[in-house]
Length: 394
Length: 94
Image 1 (cartoon, each protein chain N blue to C red):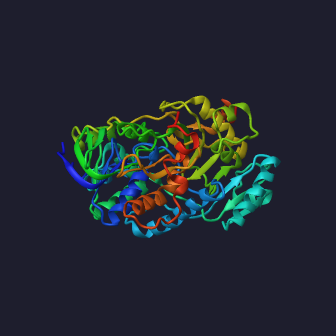
Image 2: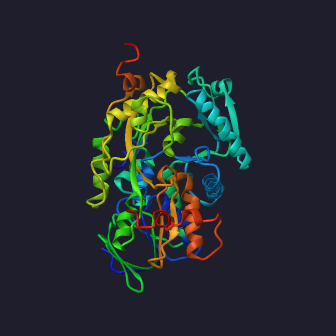
Image 3: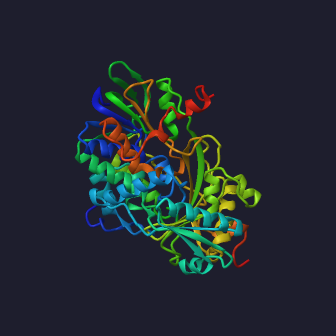
């Protein structure tokens, strides 16, 4: 039991976002504590895949934010002492049909006009990527700057370095109440903390922390399944998504069979450094039910076979689920909260938490130390939801 | 347990006792974190061979820390299953 630990900044949540914030704040010389109810990377950040991608971001602010994060990731590879399986090989997106192919052409054009390194791929390009691809894939596109990491190893590396800068980490400390006097008082199952500032980086659990201060945070858990395939023969080195993944994510119209649409299933193929591979993905609103749903897994397997029929005899050794912190406009909240001075929110990254963790950490550091932000933060403000509805998230 | 340090605990991922012990002492890691760092129990067999041993070792090293999830969780499908079987319910050579 710890008694009354005081810090300048208390970060609630030891997922990838909280770890990145803890790293940048500690590096900037602030005295920080990280409070985590379970283990470091024990929630969404170890129940996901590891894409640092632009390929699936809307052109504009969304892709700019990802690009800023990719730049920081490349620096972090140098700054951190522990390797985290960083592989900057680019990624590809494959189309299911000619309608998607037409949309992909436009997508490449828009992204190129925005100055991003996208390239259209035809049928033969796809076949050269991997002999395991189906013959009837009409094409796809490539984003040159995308990379892969192991998210939990990245969290461990951030924490290890941050501790060298003075960070104190408390795991197994579930926050039970937060109040504000002059300082914030954070009561946990492992004792009480006081802090001048609090960053809520609790991901899908951020609304519960918000409630303690009467702050409504419009984040909902969106469940995703992932399968782990066993190493057998090399399939390919780069990350693959299907174009329909974008449609799912942004909740746009898409042509696919009813089961695929119902469970929000779209192919994601991610080779891991130990030569296994991850197969995703699904997106469902089912509250906090973490159980693996065999019907979703079957639908995902069928979807994987549509694009990779030659993987039919590869074995799946594990399946798991995670909760993606969803927001209505698919952008995270990285913001101060006017109603409670000193309270910040960094949550709601949905499936982009791995991609956007670095830039999120940097932006919170810049907010707290009152520096010019690396990218404009207006679109990430907490009060954007209020402005839209005129009321408080009814 | 001198002389046993090189004994393989997780055969699939080739993790020996020494690596598990070192990881716990270096990082003060929980059972789950130790598994993720060493990959012990994350291999082809899904931990069916090493899990009881791993649980026993971790329990012994850690004592009774409240946040440790011992025994480690078992994830479906428990045994390796081909993608074809998951996809269409058949063995690929049926």
